[in-house]
Length: 182
Image 1: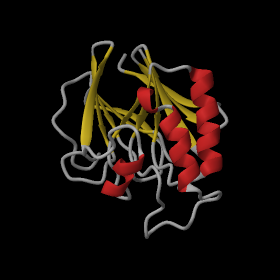
Image 2 (image 1 turned 90 degrees about the vertical axis):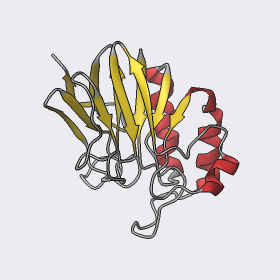
Image 3 (image 1 turned 90 degrees about the horizontal axis):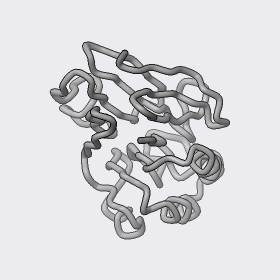
């Protein structure tokens, strides 16, 4: 099973076009989007190439492959234009015997600071901070793919899950870090 994981797109069309190219190259079974898809929110500056309607079209073109959760900048109006569900606070996916718990990371009980109770060999996938993270803590993998458009750690990024392992990648496709439960 292979997933491309991205978060905090914030309506930045150039970054999402590049992410779309990476998705084509990676050829995942599913694309996992961890929220803040179309809008920048009141705490962020406008990202370069801010064009939510263009991002909407790109995302809708891959709708059949997308599993998405709601971020703090997402709203009900987004569901009216997106062709995939995007308003759930969390979702869970089983892959290769591992439970992957998806959330944006801004709500108590679904954040790295207050994680849900997950069994060993699980992963908590969150965004929100715009800072990459790939770390095994007490048997649970903490994964934050960073942000494709407003990175707060210097480099736009996404993550890939494949066959029980994660990789953080720069938006140009360069592998930055890898980790697995073993």
